[in-house]
Structures are given as structure tokens and as C-alpha cells.
Length: 233
Image (cartoon, rainbow, N blue to C red):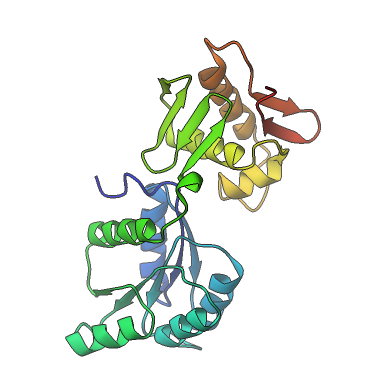
């Protein structure tokens, strides 16, 4: 299924059509992808330069700075994030111009979201992350970011998408305290505290799944600070 391997991804959508952008980012998020949005070229260039993304989806015609100019400037700054260009200009010459500006793929409008999602998935793979970054290990616990498999001592553990993202973030920061704010921003994509026990509930469920039937605890609550996953050896 398209999107089956993209739930770990973070993308930037630079699109000035607010209705189209809202639909697109909502659909990406429903597929499990973290999607940020910029509504003009200057804002998009800033966000694309200051934050790490797996893929950028950039509309060609943008206010303040056009899409091709954004891509060219990103490449000049040494940012090699794969870029998919969206454009109503779909002729061969238009596509060639876009690819020569530094784009990696070109999708003419109108398009089917399923195709956009599939192309984003391909570009995300093409980014070529180091293999060790696709697999996290803490003791005998393993998480494969590509296949979305989690195993402990060789036994498969089934997680819900949010539990997977929670464990992924904890394992990425293994041995370090992860605060409530960090989890809200990076796992739930909240930039405020909704004052609920959503984190506690998910951590409790996750702990039950990865520690039940195993002797050694890995996921610790650091009182007054947050959580930490660590193999004590």
C-alpha cells in the first residue's frame, strides 16, 4: 500500500493555495507523515533551510519567491533534500526546467493524491539515509524504521502507529531524558500542552508491550523530567 513505509517521514509543503495545502497536509498526516506548511517562497526557503526534512513538495508558482528560485537557493546552500515540484505547467520543457533547477521529480496539476504520496515515498527512500539510522537497537530491542517492525529478543511486537512513533523517538534518543514537551512536539506534533494524560497512557501501553514477558526493564520514568529508554547492561 502506498504510504506503508512513510510514517517515519517529515515533509515540507510549500503551496500558496491554502485550500489545496490544507487538503494535502491533512492527507499526509492521515498517512502518518509529519507535514509542515509554508504559504510563500520566502517562508518556505526559511523553513527548508532551518529544519531537517525527508522530502519537500514545492509548488512552482509562489508569491514572494517562485518555486524554482527556492529550489536553486536551497541547493546553493548545500541542502540536498529531495524535492517534488507541483505545477500547472506540465509540458516537457517545463519539466526539464524544473529538474535542471534542482528538483528531483515533477508532478503536473491536477494530480491524484495517491500518486503524490507514492512519489513522496520513493523520494524519501532515495534520500539514502545511512543504514544504521534505519535500524535502532537498545539492548535486545530492535526497531526497523523502513519495515515498521519491532522485535525484542527476536520476538515480534505489534504496535499501533502512534506507539511506533513514540518508541522510535525514544530509541533515537536512547540514554537521554526525553521531556513531555519534546514528545508533544515530535510525536504528537503539538506546539502546546493540551493538558491531558495522552502521553502517560501511550507510554504505559508501550511499556506493557515491550517489557511484558521480558526480564529486563528498558523504559524508565525519570520523575519530574520525562522518560528514558536505556539498556543498563
